[in-house]
Image 1: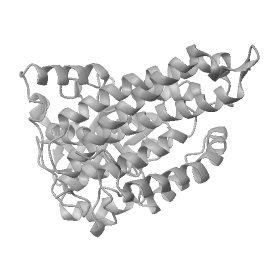
Image 2 (image 1 turned 180 degrees about the horizontal axis):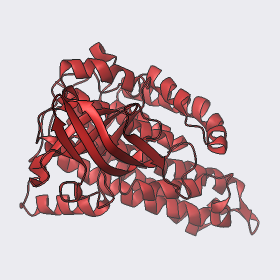
Image 3 (image 1 turned 120 degrees about the vertical axis):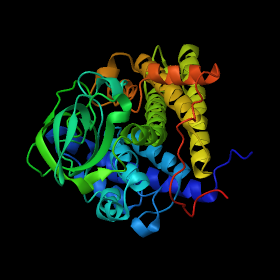
Length: 400
């Protein structure tokens, strides 16, 4: 067992950190002040090969592998959590689902442009009636009409939807068949009947928006069915499993961002004639922040290692998603204590870090859902890896 990063891992991490510090950090205020979607920044990340880390070279991927993807996502989220949503929309849940389940024609048509961020992706699952109960709450329908499907319904909290070109959508083709009636589709947003409305959300910035999405007699060709009819639930679970690598990676990045900001502040803030970092109470907070973040990071790396080894990792992905969400919120609150009233000041990132930590609690499965999955697995009621489906392709980064 080797816990050391390889030279390649260290170089990838350094390149991602340099990109975050030099290309992203100086431009955050520009994006947030005018509310402009950072498409140019996403494209720059695509050109760096960040989104293509887990994709074969034949489709434009960089084949860096899952651990390197986790390292990259952490470094980007450490600086700008908003842009890190790209690791789900441009890397995992949208294009990776097409890669894992699509036909060769679908893969060639959509995947290369998505991982280069030439087109913007989205993942349309959650509905107003519920997010965690995807099968029970789903009301969106897809009715076959000749050579087309006609889609009607509503989705909510869909990131990038107001800017997206392409997406993966889940809808009921058999409304009364429960999870067996769900099918997956590839959608294009320039077709009639599609509408996205950004949701006003406090404390999360202006550049990257989450949206309500409406489908009103929205038509797509039958060739846009992803996989087979009735297999959508399986496809969805598989997609979320891979998304549970990048979400905890991003959470660890946010936690590290809180630590970095707190350490700098401890060195500059003087109270009672000494730097606040010299106070034991502050030191205790810092110690807990560092140790808990490192524990979450190791969980993420284990999950990534298993994926690079082409082993089942649903259990470990749930562990890392749950733990990373819990400790990142705690770390952000500790940073809030260290900064005091200044945590609310726009010149510091603490409040935004806390808000994003809270938001990511629900991404790719809420904390309570992860608890249920973990507990049922521990009790031997339901094997967490029972839905595991090996990916269809190999990467040069795979551990052999």
